[in-house]
Length: 127
Image 1 (spheres, rainbow, N blue to C red):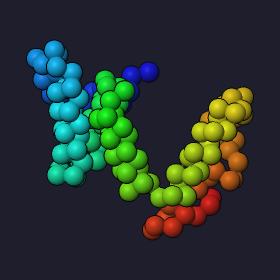
Image 2 (image 1 turned 135 degrees about the horizontal axis):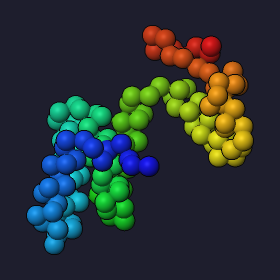
Image 3 (image 1 turned 90 degrees about the horizontal axis):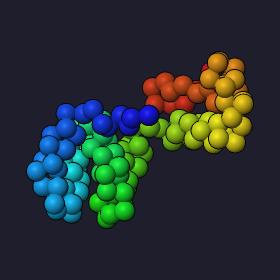
Image 4 (image 1 turned 180 degrees about the vertical axis):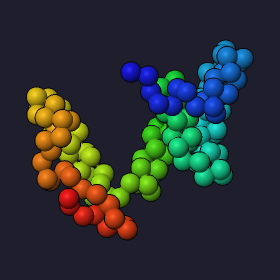
């Protein structure tokens, strides 16, 4: 499966620059991280920032920039997703790994009410 950040415009531009400077990997990873950081904090374009942070994680996984990118991704998640919704999604994910057969049932619409939460005007309401 291709990660969602592979098709973004800022990512393509960053990759073009990487091809020119392929010989200096540290410059490429620093440039990718700086581009993501600018999208995140200067442009306030969180979706595009997530895509470019994802590129840093994919292209340079064992670097300080990857650690910084992961921290920024987690900051965006905390900023955007209400805690109860995040917890419900994490519980679903863990159960899908622990019980793959039950995951197929949840995908087909037979979900437990514990995980059927909707957010209305900043509060979480179980459906």
